[in-house]
Image (cartoon, rainbow, N blue to C red; front, side, top):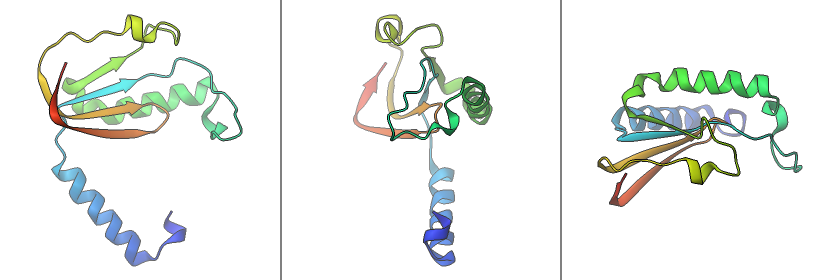
Length: 119
């Protein structure tokens, strides 16, 4: 992206990111571990398709998230793709407003719930 925008625009985006990151407070972070093979459908980036790279990236992601270890719930570590929803359960504990859903392929999404999510 940096090569497509001016340095001034990049600096502005970087400052915005830093401010947003400093203000962000997570209630809970779900991490979904990789459990199936990449499918080469002609659209996906296959540079991380091999298990060695995926395992390395997953470890890096978990290391980065270790600062929030009291808020992390790892989903699917002992399940396969056919039974993921059947074997993954979360016991109701508390109401949440900000939830981070992280897939170890590098996608990180924040979900803000207007009505509180109870898990």
